[in-house]
Length: 431
Image 1 (cartoon, rainbow, N blue to C red):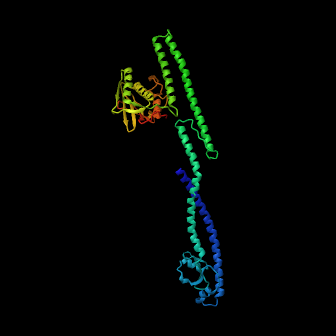
Image 2 (cartoon, rainbow, N blue to C red):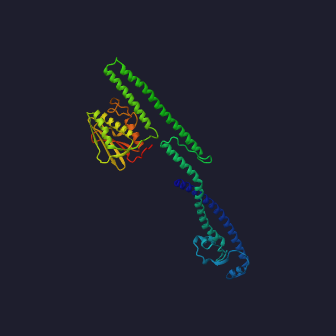
Image 3 (cartoon, one colour):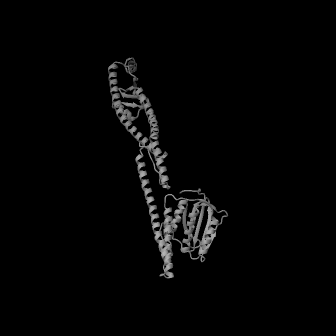
């Protein structure tokens, strides 16, 4: 609110200053012009009076005679020698031409008496002094009014800002997966129509997400049923050779694996993922899982490194199992002989790293492999197996955990994939 308030207030204050200056210029032009004309008439009238009243009086008695006259003026009218005033050449020239010269510092006007070395001095004039004081007062008043504009700006902006904060919180919750989040403003609010538009958008997004979930679940269910029947009929068939039976069973298995991967990716590709966080001894868990991989893949050297003595962290065992399966199977698919799985902790993060001695992943392709169904040619294509969802699922799980996945080169010569997540995840978290 502070930034918006300052911007709006400065805009209003600058507009106020510009309008005040324009009004002041117009007033100054008209007032000074009228004042100058009035003063010129006054001086001419005074000079006419001097010539008529003081015609027969010596100059040394002029001031005394003027004092005795009952002119009833609010300012002093007197006659002084011209050499009394220290004037610039331009002012002297104007005096000789019969013009009125203003002495701003003394709030006085002087005009030369024709055919003499005397000037008629009018002042100091209280009105001019008052005008000078009024300028200072006007400037002070103008700044006071400008500062006072902050109060109505704040009063006007506060309800709008509160509504904007409500809308921001609703949008953040909606973005974090609370698809039932809605916003309701009072009918008098300026953001009422924006709230209606937000709710309509939220309804449409919620409908699309629900439709996507129903579509994927429906397709998976409809595909599983004929696949089960197909596998049953293959088992019951006597017309197929063992080689053909194995090939068909492998194809059916790949279809089933693809359906399972699609369902997993669809569950993770939602704004909110249910996490069942538990306290896990990650080193023991890894030892147990890697023992199964060694049993199934005896031709590969699969090593585990856990340099830290304490290897307890918070994680979702079900999703972590999927991460480990995908990373290890992906590494086994391209490794020549060696695999290394490492686990360590850095500040408040746990890091699970899987390395292989295969061809590796080019730097320009390391972000693209997280996209679904992406395979890298020529070394990573359909002939090597897989459906291109393994790393995409790992990346989605990392996002659900609030972590990240980093691909780099390994000291073994192939790829290194690091799965990083915060070890202080709260229990029963819903992301």
